[in-house]
Image 1: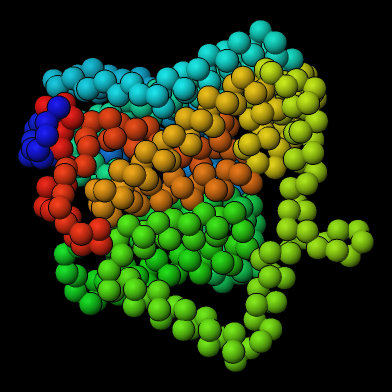
Image 2: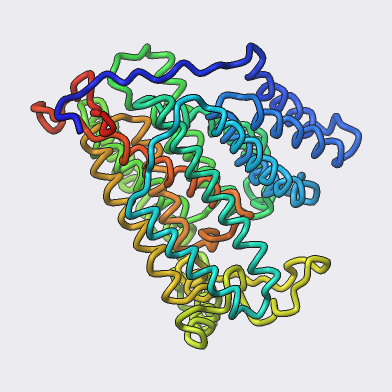
Length: 477
């Protein structure tokens, strides 16, 4: 282990001249689909699925990773859902084969990233495997557990390869690869939500799904705003405008979990990258909020009615979590009946005992959050290592981001932090078909690989000053 920073020299990766063509091909197909220029939805799904599969096969690794995640994102849109419910699994299966082939063809073998995080997740998968013998829907449990194993495998290998290939710049590469596709869906959906804010179900069918996508993307978009080198006023203004526009769309969604997650991510950005420019922005924001409250004394009460107390109970009292009370109570009841191993991985209620591949998951119920949802599925034995792994990763990655102060790394960490908050109120954490879980686990495994491979270089600079040019030290040397 090196005691001083060393220059990271990534290997020269062979790339094809046309390797990036699948990305603009995806843009063109998505634009044609959104404008209804194609003759049928089946043709749209075929063209989009083909462009994503081609990107997985030949595009640079960061765009290949973003492509297979985009297949699950497309399945969440109301306009593509019916066709992509099957296409996403085909892209996942193809990605396992194609990316495994690409990993083995690499001349330079990746370093091992087995840590407490990975061991705890292996324990979680082991307990989940045990539930296949106790579940009331064995076929459903087998299929969903197999899909989660594929997601974990791809996320782990892709994160390791990105870190081994790009070194300290891998966070920036991953961010651009994920943004290349996710931002396209935001751009397609944003005009509809902006022109018809009352219609909160357009494009993604659920305002919470749309808000979760914004909570995933906004920390990535904020990363360039915190770069240390001087930026031109026009470019900086455009970046800030895009970020503020995304925050405005998030407010229109009314999703409290997503807003709280983004607020926490922005707070982390300000704490890690504090400087005079950020201090001035925070001061200006405080002045504007204060002026708004002084000119309109009812502003705070209106805000609380719109975002905090959205649901009424029978006795006309208000409750912050009224929309989650019934799902939480149902999940708690299932956990109390099966406290150790739960109902079985992927099983949300007893009605799913009648599930079959022909019928589909018609009996799935909302659990109101990933905490009680996980406990009801895999019990205390399976949930404990999973929750502990996430908690340990958040703590270690937070320390790492604080010492390195790379805005791209902070963006990835902020996205994971925002999604962790969102998972408390949404049950996607171990749902293998949900795009939010794909983005979450992909970034978690990437952070684990980065922490395992590098350590922050020793620095004598003050806490709030810019770090030295080489803020990384390679652990493998």
